Amino acid sequence: MIPDISTLTDALIGDPRNTFAVNQHERPLFIRATTQGNRIACDLNSKLALKQIRKSAKEAGARPSTRQLREGIEYLVDEAHGSGVTVITSLRIARHGNGIALDTMNGRNEVVLLSDGEVKRDAVCPEVVFLRTDAMLPYPEISEEPDLTLLRKYLNISDMERFVLEMKLCHILATPIGPHASFPITHIQGQEGSAKTTAAKLKKALVDPNRVDAVAMPKNQEELYHAMAGNLLTIIDNARTIPDSMSDLLAAAAYGINAKKRQLYTDLNSVILPIQGSICVTSIDQVFTQPDAMSRLIPITTKPISKQDRKSEAQLFSQFEEDKPKIFTALLKLTAKIIDKLPDAVPTNPERMAGFSHFLAAAELADAVPAGHYQGAYSALLESAMSDIAEENELISAISKLLNKYAGEIDLSPAELLKELTLTTPRELRSVAWPRDPSSLSRKLNTLKGLMASQGIRYETYRHGGRKILITRSQSGD
Image (cartoon, rainbow, N blue to C red; front, side):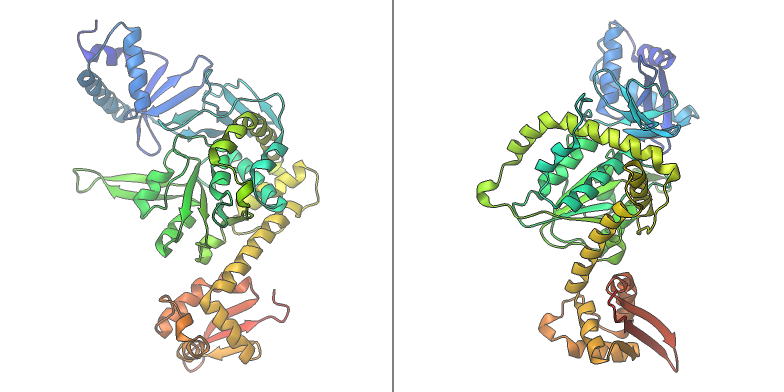
């Protein structure tokens, strides 16, 4: 028996396989080298750390009490913060040379390397520190019979949407969370019973298996952080509305933001909340209305399913379990091929999410298809969604009617324009978001500028005896 927990903590610190440090987000870590030479980390305040410390105590013939374990963890947290060592941790996937290393979390702690266009098993990447969380689950096993076509029977969407969704899955596997990474937001929309949630959860099971596969729409920045923490892909299920403030946060999370909150029991200290990663939102209605978020979307629409053809989620996932290793391995092989072509890829017509356009350009090289072919499919989905959203926007609809009245060119002051638009739109068709004064009209027009441009409507302001607004529409409508 160990008479004092400090004996165990000293043994843990002295073990050459172990490192106690903090990561780039100032979280205290327990890092352990595997027998293969790779390094796995967990937060010292996690259940994973507690499990490892219990295991180490058992190996030493000790049975510390819960109180002793807490004392030991507090001591190790102090050791991590006082070590002066900061390590960069990676969630599930990490850059390694010109490729991507992937932590499978299988029973052998195997690391897979996607490099030189191949899937290399049992890789050793000692420079990488993989961070694991309590909720993570292992990736599917590698199959000797990869088959991406098996995914089709589980996705109730068009062929073009399925292809872009497959590219998005590969993009997640090829893009570690961190600086300079960007992640398009997937929006899966469809009527009730059209398998929206199932499609989203299938995505999650393939690229980011987790005990928590979906969450409700967060209400604020801190809730969004907790929803996304420890996830490559966050599923926000059954959204009814997205407030403008949350729409802005989702758009920012596509590129990554560092939020701050006050540390407990202090007035001056703060805690960094990194918010970044892939997001998938499911909804019945069109919930994205802000152009900034809309330009970051991969819009997917599920097809209606008749009642007699519907299957329960449990039935579908039971069948999916058999196919999952084959689909996952096919995704890895395709991702490896695309990664190999990234240095030579040049987007022909990049969208707002330029990183994804670059990835599609690399996929075109990998599959030897004409430049712009895959990028065009993505652009077509975006343009179609933007057109649908523009048609539903009350202000753009009113401007379109007014352009007909003014033969394609409106040149008025903000006050005059608001008056004309209000006369064009009956009171019962104006929502509470309708601009109440010339200043609010100008602000709304600024936010809608990109959406109007997608419909061939150009908006600009100038001064001539006062502020003026010039709105024109090209005759071609593009």
